[in-house]
Image (cartoon, rainbow, N blue to C red; front, side, top):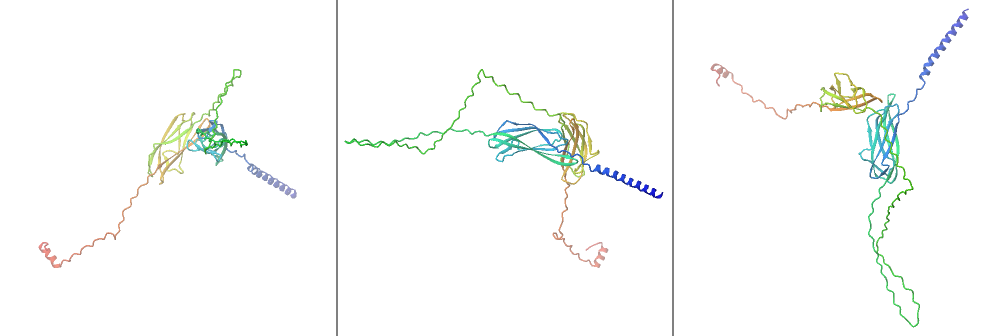
Length: 391
């Protein structure tokens, strides 16, 4: 009887251990299951066009295109750089820079990029241009730098220089006189006369080749005129979006450590739709101008298009640096989603002037020694006391 009970107890214990191992293995299997890998951010260039179609060396031309962000990431700090891929060409910018920056981040339609360029020196033919797109975005709290290279080809024509006419020269021809024939009784055969000698001056003869433009024949009555080309399609309008500009107003030119100043924050909506849920967050980690009297988050009302909201507050000047910095990030929403923009101001901090007391050298100015006084005898003091103080 005891043997059967022991075997039953051992079976129950083994079953419990097996169930415990299965329960522990299930969370481990779930933890080791890899998650979906996020896709990388990529920008899209649409409606790329070069004006004019044929570029003339020495004349300015434009490269225009629309830049879209159709990914789920939030693109920031976008820079567009143009570069010529042929080493023998000199590509310059009519505005002085070849890199254009777009500081308004977001998704969807980012910007309408227009580059004003000019070939200072280039051979005729097809030239290759490279458009570099540099930007950053965040995945899982990690900052990632993105770069794309888009290439395009432009047709370059070199202008023909104007030729000048060269005066022609008339060669001088000289003839040698033929000797006279002397008759004789017996006629003899005389050699034929020598050909005349022509002396040309040592002058370079330049042949000019001229080209005449032939008039194109007018179309006859039986040949129908070709139809006119269709009008160009209008550019696709960009979707409506808000654009918020942040500025500091009423800041003093110079502040002192420990001073309390009053400064206003001006937020203006230059877009075409309303900016809702506007919040201004002040960064106090690296700033020397800290808002006081209220929290570091200022809540503003919704800002309609072409409207401005100003909110004033007090700031404490902390630290003993040279520049007092205040940095604010404004977050808001529009029809395209959440957006944000950043503004910063730097005010010089004046330091108190320390005046050091002048130091004197004891050895430089000698102290005059007091002259010794003669000792008065005792009997003279008695006489002065009796007679009222005479000498």
